[in-house]
Length: 153
Image 1: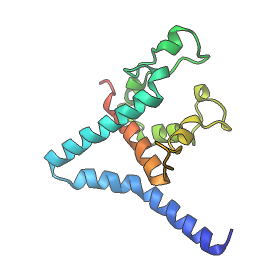
Image 2: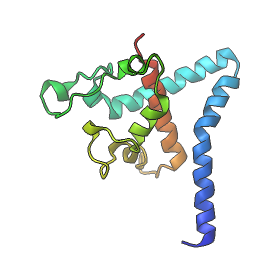
Image 3: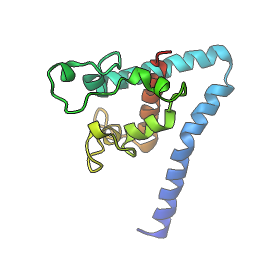
């Protein structure tokens, strides 16, 4: 790899690492009515991702009950995703959930490290168009935001 390509790759990685921070700042800085509409839009996008990628194992409500569990097709019972905040002393583990979804943090039920299922799925082409890293990050962030929105008190 040439020095120019390394510099370009490094710059893209740096920009991608700043995206979540920028998204949070934008949500925080926008007027309340606008922010609420944007939050609902993000949660709806995350719910679509959830239904596409997660509901088959975690169930539509995220409680870990699905057709996969009822047919005993899983060796590990899926986590009740509505209880993550409770298990973390009332704080939603946003970045831990993000790392689990993108494949950087291992989860016994998701397979071995050499098979990071969901991180790769979010990077695959949609409708024949390649997905750039920023788009993949956005899809994962929307999903994490949705999971945060289904937390039980």
